[in-house]
Amino acid sequence: MVYLSRIYTKTGDTGDTALGDGSRVAKDHPRVAAYGSVDELNALLGVFLASVRSTPTPGSTPKGREEKLEALIRSIQNDLFDVGADLCVPIQLDDKALRVVAAQAESLESEIDQFNEHLQPLRSFILPGGTTAAAWCHLARTVCRRAERDVVTLSHAEPVNPQVIVYLNRLSDLLFVLARICNGAGSEDVLWIPGKSRSDQR
Image (cartoon, rainbow, N blue to C red; front, side):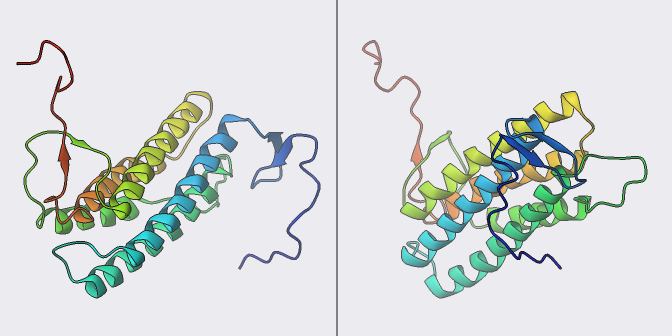
């Protein structure tokens, strides 16, 4: 159990911070950037969930949709704390730290398959937007991709649990699907029209 007795410690006032193993690094270290992006993603999922509660999706039962999405997003937010805990502790030979496991990404795959059954087939790439909830979800998807890139950058310099990258990759796919769900199961998706505004378009 985590116990926080104080919110401010002043130990980072000189621009460095403590990792989970007690070592200290600069706050712009690739490891800090990686779990910082994961933290940003987690916060954005909270905004997405709040928007889901306030903007019912056309063509679905708001209460049923809210209950399923809330349970799913809360579970993902908890997973993202696991991801952050994994990233903040460098991998060691006698590793006993909390690590992300394959089953967590597999759970996301199951959710993707279930939600995707209710979506209209895609005929083109879609533009981010639509309902408020879908727009927030698309933004969360892009932050998830950035977090994934940050972890890959870290992996070039230090060992990283590969399941972290797998999890973030799968999560971005799920967020794309959920954005479509929030757009009336895809009925309100705005499709990309290649070259639409070009003067030579016929």
